[in-house]
Length: 252
Image 1 (cartoon, rainbow, N blue to C red):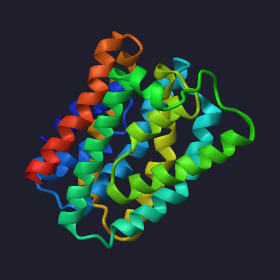
Image 2 (image 1 turned 120 degrees about the vertical axis):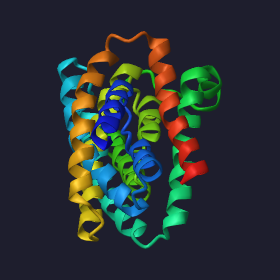
Image 3 (image 1 turned 60 degrees about the horizontal axis):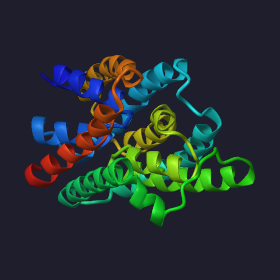
C-alpha cells in the first residue's frame, strides 16, 4: 500500500513540478502513522532521487534555467543542513503544526501568483527578463539559504517559495520555473536528508518503499507537464499543497 500510494503521489509531484515533500510527510504521518521526524527524514531523502528523475526529464525538454538553478541550489545546501539540525530539537506536535501551516502558506502564495497575477504585479515589481550578473549571485545565494532552511527544518521542499522567487526576482517563465525548481530542490533535499541521517532519524525500509513509488511516478508525471493545458496545470499546482496542508492540520 505504501509503494502504490507513493507511485500515485510521485506522478502528481512530477506533473506540477513541486517538491512534494510536505505532501509526502502528510501521507506518511496521517495515512501510515509514521512519527513526524522519521517522515521528514524519509520525505527529504526521497526527494533527492525524485527531483533527479524529474529534473532530467524537464532538462531534455529545455525547461530548466541551469545557471539560476545551480546558484540557488548551492545556497540551499547550507540552509537545509542547518534546518535539519534545528528540526531535530523540536517537539513532534509543534513540528506537525508548523509543517501543515507551511504547506498552507505555500498554497496561498501559488494561488495568488497563478490566479491574481495582476494584483501581485501591482504590489510586487515583476521581472520580464532573466536576472544576471552580480545580483544573480547575491539574490540566488540568499534565496537558497532561506528556502533551504525552511525545507530542512520543516521537511517541505519549499517549491511554492522557490517558484515565486524564480518568477518575481529572477524573471524565469512559468514552464521553466517548474523544471528549474526541481533542480534547486535536488541539492536542498540531499543536504536536509544528510542532516536527518546524522541525527539517526532515517528509516531505510520506509525510505526504500517511498523512494521507489515517488521516483517512478515523478518520471511519468513530468512527461505530462509539457502537454497539459495551462488551466489544468495551474489548478494542480495549487491543489496539491492545499489538500496536504488541510489533512496535516486536521488529522495529524
